[in-house]
Amino acid sequence: MSYLTNMNLESLDLWLHLPGYATLFAPKCEINKTPYPELDMEGSKQVGIAIAERITSAQSRPLQTLTLHISRSHEMDRQGSYDYEAMMQFTRNNVGGLSEMKYEVTTAHGWITATYWRTEDFIIFEKSKK
Image 1 (tube, rainbow, N blue to C red):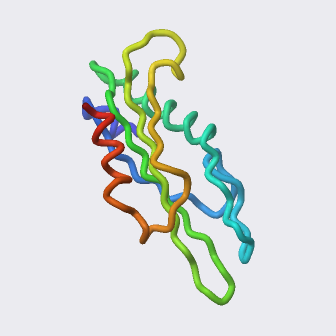
Image 2: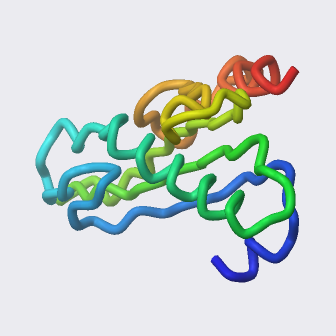
Image 3: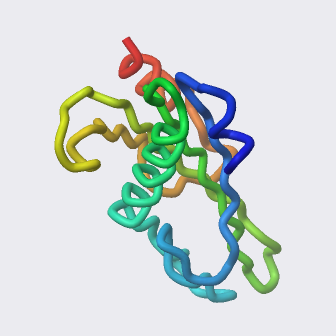
């Protein structure tokens, strides 16, 4: 984190690969359990806002856009593992007050199999940057 805070960033794309155990992003993955654990949108928002605020507090200017690319693997007994991804974007809206009020959060969707990303999934974030 210290490396990121010294860069004076305006926007950041951050890739996170989640472990199989429970985190603020999702519950524990259990082998052979379907469906795979849902992405916890509220927990993910809290983490994203905390990261954006931490970077902003260490810079001379605020971080305007943070895009989280979240991935996780889910093990199935005979079928190997499946990789799932989700994206969330936090755009600073320059409203004062609580941290949650300072950011507009755009989410393409919850988990999606890594091979199913469509162009439309990325366009939603480009529109929010304008």
